[in-house]
Length: 115
Image 1 (tube, helix red, strand yellow):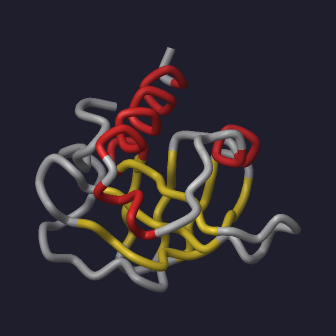
Image 2: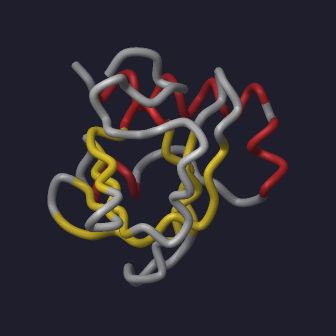
Image 3: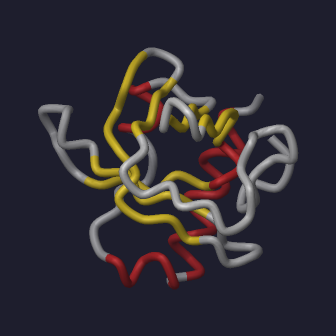
């Protein structure tokens, strides 16, 4: 993962690409689907609806955690397990997508998984 808030050059993401509705796969299975994509430079991230899990909630995943975007299969793969995503700082409201403190916490969490 390079910049945690940007899609990697090898991810397959194309600027302007619509990802809403794509399935999201962790390293150990499908976790849900893309509910929203923030494509603003320096803040790129996905909001993923995890309704397929019992705890069914939305999670915010920084674009840097995305390893593969497959337009043909309509899937997005991320470099984190279900448990790691579930343990990430909790996403509760859309206002958090502009809360610098929350974004810093999420970014630091995903950076810590790299290593």
